Image (cartoon, rainbow, N blue to C red; front, side, top):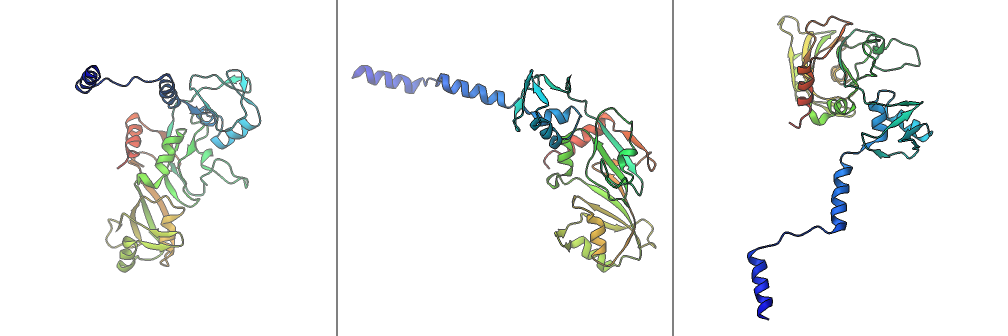
Length: 275
């Protein structure tokens, strides 16, 4: 009895760390390993040959192999160091590319058009060997800043309302915007898909021109700026995006493009940090 009491007092005075059992140890190792795995469709998309959805179709059709073994199971995860083959070639992750275009009018924001209309992809043709995509959309009549990249994760964040990416548009209306309607817009306009919130709205620097408006917004809803003004009986003559996520049109004429600097890329990544 005395020995038991002494052992109990000893454990209380000098607590012994719990030793992981073999089962718990293996579970810990596996959990750590899972964090480094990547979905096969994401790996294929990062190689620049197609989108994730198209990658799923390739996997299901049995034309993708990993370490010499054909993989057809969707959702399969692999190690980034695994050897992935398609069409007899080993796929490798592309370097991230970021390109900024000053979009002209009459070009649609899509990678392909069945009606054979002019797309923004024609304007950046041969800009790089990597497969890049537009981040979000500008409708056919809207001009201004449009970002392209092959960094799918960053693109997804830039388009998500959670990160409240700042966008500024210059608007030319068919008639003067009344102060009453400006107050309505500033307070939020009810549209068919909810209230459209505006961060800032103001007349252009020319005080005598109340048809020229500057509007700052973070919503990514389709045609949101046009719908705001149309809901109050105005028609937009010109709509130009002059600012996007810290990027401007400085030294970038209409229809021209340029690659982002490393400083601008880092700025974009900071823009998608939780505010």
